[in-house]
Length: 456
Image (cartoon, rainbow, N blue to C red; front, top):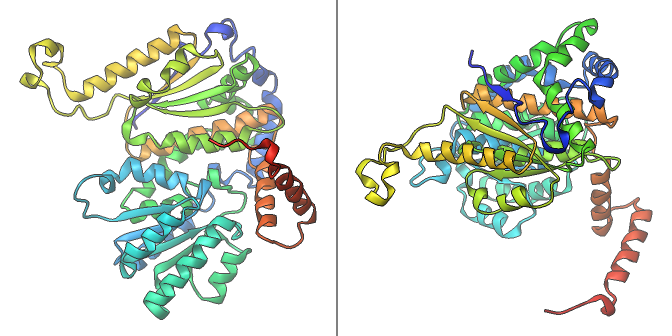
């Protein structure tokens, strides 16, 4: 089995000099965290870790994919955790769609309220060759449901009674509008397991259905994740020691120590080009899980080498409030050799390959961050296949859960986000939101005051 590693050499630097995992707040709370973690596992509240749904999913998924075999396109309706994981996997393992002369399958992800793009898809996608996947665990996500209503009408107009054969609903197994739709219309569906929030759902039907459509190896993703989870799935009496030895625990403790020492931002710097969208996936996972009660650190996705030439100046010489997860791989393709393509002035490149430049830039940036006092954990992936991606995703999700338990917050809810949803629903005229309606009227009245407007 390929082993990847975390390098802690420069993790406790600058203001954190002298700090350590052993002397951290996390260390003092290890017993409490272990008890909470064990209780959550036993109660089935961490399905991203235990994957009780795996056997059934591996039976159902091939049947659904066979149903969609004639489709060349998939239009995924989903937002946030219903889309970010799928996009990360698409970009990592099915990049042909972004390259010239693509002849294979294509995945289109409707993860925003963008009338222009939705119109373009509906007017140009060959709907007879398009599968529509609707992802909402609650079945009540207004953005996704609004898209579905419009797409469903267009499918019905174009395909008639056959529209259902092109649609898959991924939602709660028992409740919600989409589950009712699946029952009432006898539609194809896959369940989102209980307790599996969107940002932890990439290795369920939410991410694996679009991944499987594109030919991505779902089994390898799950096997990789399971290999990270396995050391923690032990008896309750052994959980404490298992946690203390696990890299996810060390990441959680380090992240907590960062905030304790005034580092309020956490850079996710990827030098694996096809994995660049993992940064966006990680950002939602970290921010929505841990930004509570005035706590947490702001995740900042960055792409090497692109962001060396955009935001790295701020990372290096701006406020000293940043830590960094730095992602590289020794297994990337080397690319074309320069040879005589490089003129004399650039002769240093002649015995190099194009990929050598990426590795040199990664090392230079990592050293520069260290020199400027940015505490940094280097994650070196010795492979970049699906198994490796599953391992990284499971490591990040587990570290996030453990960081929340150290902080004393619930890492699987998002109460502040719900306020904005209720206010939006009130603006659209949803019933039963009297208080939100009053707040809207007060807010829009103040915003309409000409004294506060400035033209440009």
